[in-house]
Length: 250
Ligand SMILES: [Fe+2]
Image (cartoon, rainbow, N blue to C red; front, top):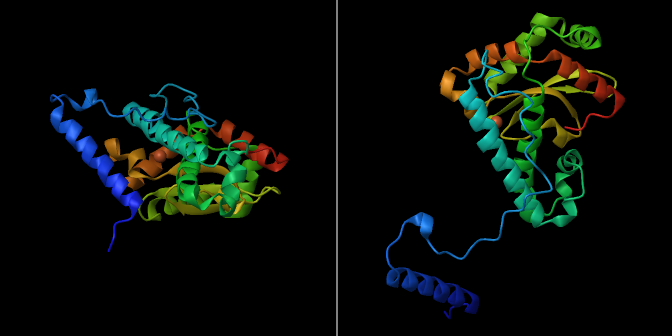
């Protein structure tokens, strides 16, 4: 069977690179004179700054975990999303929630990357927003909705903790909010989000091991229990009002 010309070209290129490497003096990887990759696109999406100090959530999450989670994990989702969108520029002008709600229309070549990294960007952007508080309980219309839809605060909290601890492997537990104010608890694997179902997210907890492993190791239930202590219910109440007004995005 004859070799495909494209394949032969690839092989020749590889041999040339290998030969050059052999002839060149040894040097550290950091100095390797590899062809410079194209600069990673810096947009259209960007990493939002943490809205508080990294140690603001010590009652549940240590500062080092916050730094790695935000500065490495979330940053990687943003960078990879931008790289995917660079291959499908028609997506760049769209709102992220609209892209996620219409993944079937995203070009297949980048669909998985957009799903995982667009979901990751949306989920984490929401996650940072709703923490930095002192826990407690919500008030007003949100508390009334919790009473109506879950039968009270304790049952809501228990059901959310159950969704968080029983999500198998990496994923999230969310509370969704309908335009008329109805609440529901939803589990999602990986970086999937209810935005992909056209729903709005009121709040959600990240139960990937990267969210808790340094302090809690395998004790996810303990992390989930402590997480309530750092919620900012004022922020979540504002999201509830925005969802009802039709202005909540991610
Ligand atoms: Fe995460």
